[in-house]
Length: 525
Image 1: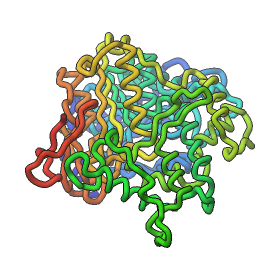
Image 2: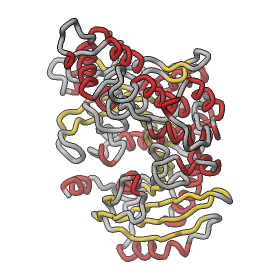
Image 3: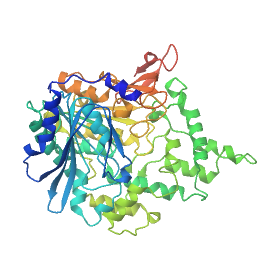
Image 4: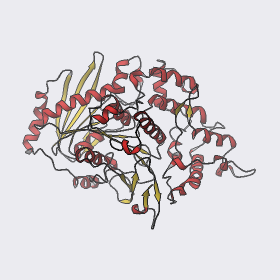
């Protein structure tokens, strides 16, 4: 409850003022007002601020049995048909403290979970917030099997439909409608945000897209590739988590100080090209502190780009510095579930396909299919720019699931396609690499940037990347840096230090004086 008390201090002032009874009665009667094609309201319920809301019927694999609702909210659940054979489950959360802004949230993984924590975060900040289940329930890709309509929902249609319906609902609930439209999402949600930027350029005024899973098919092939490198546990090529820790410490030894400070964080992995053979055991050396030559080759392969059958780049290297988390995910010696499901239920329509047989030809087959352009790799953002849209994207430099180098590769593609240098891209598209951030949050550094409820430290746009997007859109003031906080012990805990993260292609350098925890001792160069 201490976290709730902390959050309550930051509640925004709404532009719509409801008497308590009026807000509750409007919520109760709202289903009677909804007369939209293909929309069936399941329920509308008033949820008082401070409620631990039990999410009845939420799929167990979504691992979200309840959600803290911070502010008085009208929660509306509905089913929306997307075709004769498919539908999405859509929720809209309308807060009492409404600020006249609409917000759509995205999904994660293979995307069958409404992210109620994003709904809670958006409504807490005064947004009318919607989220959908991408046309199927749970985290498995099995619903894609022989159901192209479900695949289409996952690729783009669920989000797009939810936005269209959500905006109509917002106008029905609030007399003044909404003044600006925003998006928030990370990982698959980051890809969804860029899908909107690329194909629905007038949908959002501002987009916050973290660790985007664009270049999607090649990402899944890259993720499947690691099992062929490591082999299963016990193989000569395999490294245990303890051995990956040895690798991580050696990479830090070689690269940590390149930014001017030895703080356990690689500030710019672009500068880090570790020499892995330094880890090979000397004759007679205790193998608990070093690697075999075969294991060193495994590390070298994992830190290398992934190329296709014709030698073209499919996916850039995994950035060094993410080894600790990677040891239990991509390098665990087990099939990566999202890649396996995609190949089983989309690429080959064969539930018995064996991920151990994966090879580069499979990657070619998958890329040639690209259903509904799930790649999300279009690099001409002219229509979005001309519509006045702003997109802020961030990527953790300790990301163990989606290499941050892919976001930099996409940035280069946009610059080359649009023939624009960074100073011109800055007008509508800014990329912020976040040192010390893992996949979307956590990590060893100042990763709390306000991109989600668990990383909230305040509403000031300097400390809150979502509110920075709002300020950019509504006041024309673009963020020069993204200021993150290192939390001592998780959400709501004390702040150990803050650090300002530079927008790409600038990088952070420690120049002092003082300790590395002093944010003013770091400079963007």
